Amino acid sequence: MPRTSERGGPQTRARIREVANRLFIERGYDAVTVAEVAREAGVSSVTVFNHFPRKEDLFLDRTEDAVELLRSSIRDRAAGVDALESLEAAAIRLFDERQPLSGVDERSAGFFRTVADSPALVARAREIASELQRTLADELERDPGFDGDAPLFAALFLGGYSSVLVQTAGRVIAGESPTAVLDDHRARLDKLFDALRKGVSRG
Image 1 (cartoon, rainbow, N blue to C red):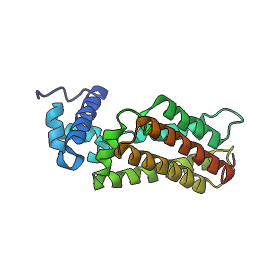
Image 2: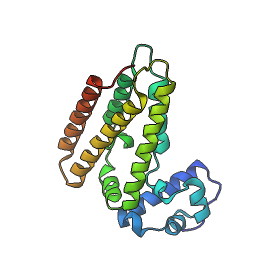
Image 3: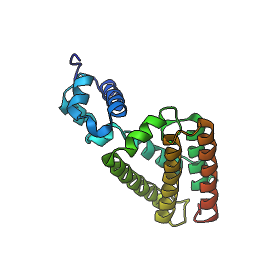
Image 4: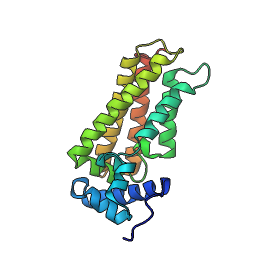
């Protein structure tokens, strides 16, 4: 593909991500090199790494979105709304809008299969979950309206949400009907927040 401008900013980043996602889903993450992604996107490998410091981040590229969602759920919640209520509202909104972070958007099947087939992506996904857990715990510890055990709350919330996503991924990969997958996902979200509400939620 002809070389595009190396200074495309967000447009270049989006192009690289689009190409990488297509190649990874078509051929498998481990079978595609960064050089191939760069060539297909019309940029250099250096440019790819300028936008995505790790190869895994070409596919698992929504960490910043997840961090911002967690922070805004704690920092921007209305008076009288506790942390758990705000996180639950955010999770339900993701589900209702079928956003990528929900795990139930129309592209989830290819995403889940690609991650499951790559030990490197599985390992990076676990690292991201740990990073998000620390982010949430830090936000709660700084929040004057939260008087619970921040590390425990964050661990249980992120662990529980990750469990919901893993179960959904298994159902999607198994080829279950979209309606059954969606119904089960929403039911498990309700169970998760009900369990947290009866357990560690304070503030």
